[in-house]
Length: 126
Image 1 (spheres, one colour):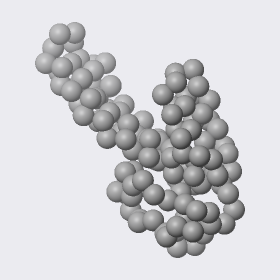
Image 2 (cartoon, helix red, strand yellow):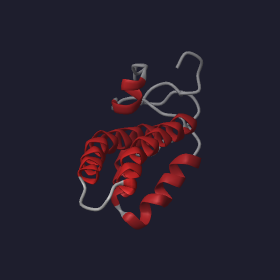
Image 3 (cartoon, helix red, strand yellow):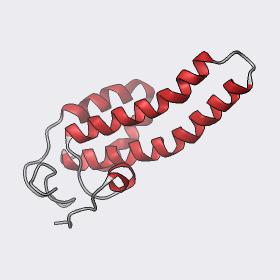
């Protein structure tokens, strides 16, 4: 059995070990949607060809890079919590299957008790 992973936002968003419950996974995904919505909203308000549009595009790229890594590692932790292999995260890059895969990760129940990736995330003190 694996040791309890670190705690805090750095582990949640960027750590590669441990397990994530459905609720925490959904809230973290909502966080990234909101972060990525900020430059998208700025781009929608900007005039075509303006400096504001260029800055909004740069802001989106700079926000997307850590978001992509974070979504990948959070999805792997969620798959491990559900007792599924982390390699299934590759399905998220297939456009037709990614929405279906995200839905599965949101509704698939956690494995009860500890597994080789750590203790269950719903245990006290997790």
